Amino acid sequence: MDKSLQARGETVRRQVLGNAYVDQALGKADDFSRPFQDVLNEYCWGMVWTDDALDLKQRSLLNLGMLAALGRMDEFGTHFCGALRNGLSDDELHAALVQIAVYCGVPAGVEAFRVARKARESMSQEVNDA
Image (cartoon, rainbow, N blue to C red; front, side, top):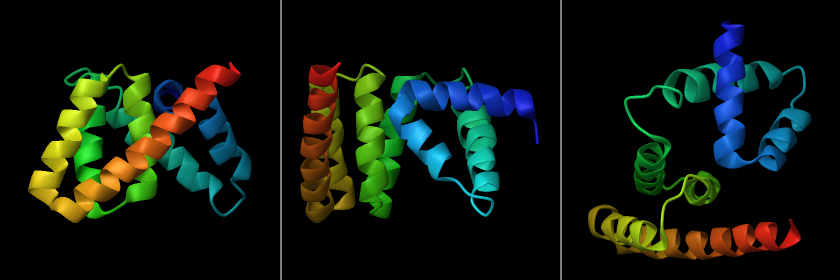
């Protein structure tokens, strides 16, 4: 394991998903799941998300499309909040969700909009609590 890449990955993971989310994920890790958290920080977040070829907004858009296509709506909600943190506008997110509906099917679009609404409410509450 590359500890430097893990650390850089955790930093960007916190930037995108928020400290509370990452603290909860790491805090719930036990001896069985902790090595997987290291893999996530090193490979997913360290190797991929710190690569400068794409910016964080572009990566967020890609993740939303892929997660919707795969039907991974819990992760979609997490990454929708990340997309908001990464500075995607309401217009950009709306356009992405419409495109998801066209290319992944209307049921996927309906679910994406439903999850996005909950994520927006959650982010709004987070801002109000701060």
